[in-house]
Image (cartoon, rainbow over all chains, first blue to last red):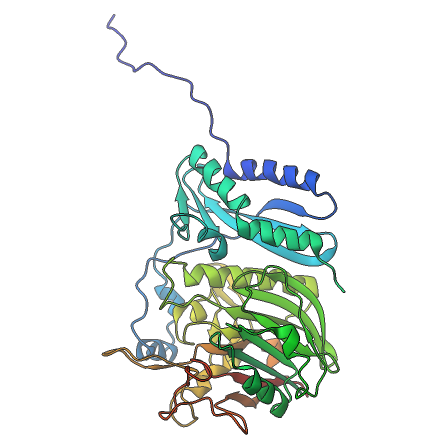
Length: 169
Length: 269
């Protein structure tokens, strides 16, 4: 019988999904500010899409399309299918009915990573290298680092402070 | 009629006198501002403003954005959400609730952090749809500085603002790739060209590029609002009795007022 040609296998730790990490953080802040802030991560029923088609050159091109029976949307181009699962991290407040503030969207495919983050510009510019939109994150470790910076950012702290201080009068 | 105005005031600290005259002469009931550097709480207390205005309280809004309303004629019922770039409100006016969304989208000229306009539009439309469900109505209008023209893709694409120049195309939702997409009516298309002056709200000249005049400041609305919308009321404003917002070439005088002209429209009846 011949020797094994297989490489030695190793059991690797499973990377936590970004939405599960965020869910833990939501529980922490909800416990800390119970009754004032409600943070949650929820799955969206549709994805955000970016198209790779080049932009229309001019108003003339648009006008000609509108004048015909063709639909502009037939020229949307390719979308990225690696972002089929979308979550949003939102903040609501029991004292401010119907109000919602969104901290970020995240998207990934069937695999948790790479994951793609969309954060508010006011948050992204606090980074030494401002975050792209979307910001691609390849590992759990990188996600933990970026998420820490986002949740502890001046912008998020300012908004959450306003929420807990909100007075309707 | 409820008169609504929007102005990007270019962080001009000396705009208040002209702004007060604009508000009073046009009997503005709801005013949205962006790039406003003044103190809006002091502005509403000016002696030359005859109406009783209140400032809409915001939470996560940009510090240069402000919204005021004539509390004798309209009421602000609730703030649904806000962020740096937009806010969604429920107002009571003309005996009904309306959803008014004020926007100031990123400028393509100065935006060095490349935010996809398309993604931004999708976020806003997603939030609007949630608010329409909460409010149980679709009398929704989006007003503000879109920083793009009506013919640009984020304003046209079905997954984005999906805003058409003909309101007859906005009656029913469109089906595209198996999904339904409601649309908006964009009356700003009617203001292109030089039959109506000025030919835009913003002027940008770059050698070799057209069209130089842009209609960045817009209102788009659901079909459900169009029966209340007075099309003749929609205008780009170049001045008041004592202030002329344009320079010698008829372009926005950014040195003395702003690089944008304000827009005004009315709904009601």
